[in-house]
Length: 207
Image 1 (cartoon, rainbow, N blue to C red):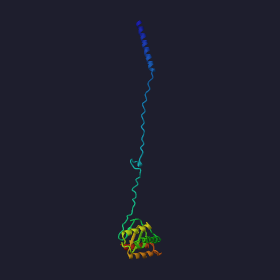
Image 2 (cartoon, helix red, strand yellow; image 1 turned 90 degrees about the horizontal axis):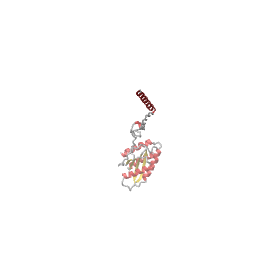
Image 3 (cartoon, helix red, strand yellow; image 1 turned 45 degrees about the horizontal axis):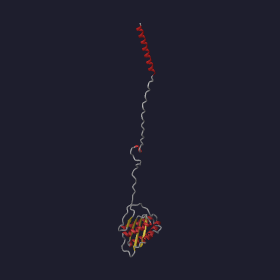
Image 4 (spheres, rainbow, N blue to C red; image 1 turned 120 degrees about the horizontal axis):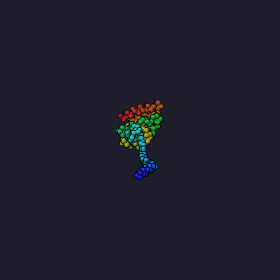
């Protein structure tokens, strides 16, 4: 009987111990889950498009090749006393009879100032001047390159639009050019007439 009582007490004590442990376990705070570190955001690079959306293209528009200008060529003075000062320049210069009379007279006056020249006659039309000279009696060299270039400089001093200069020194040519010069004062003589007669004159004397 005594032994049964002791076993009963032990059973009650053991049951009480288990109950207390279970109660203590319920009061424990469950640990909160740790937060994962946030992923570092990488900055987004913006690619600037090049012209036309094609990498490596230049900013300068490719609009074709430019226009190449044309320059005249300077001729040389030949034995016939002809100088082409502007090569293939566009036709311009003296285009009226009034200008032709005025500039022709001025050129003749300028050429006569040369010590080698006794008398001079000149006619101009468009970009061409035809000049005939009579030499001073003291001058014996004739129409050489030096004198031709001096006459050319006098012509250019009067009108820079004149790009062709023809100089003759034969007596017959001087008389023919003088007669043509007198026609400039004729009211019925036109620029077309002058161009035509000057061409015939230069074709004859310059070959």
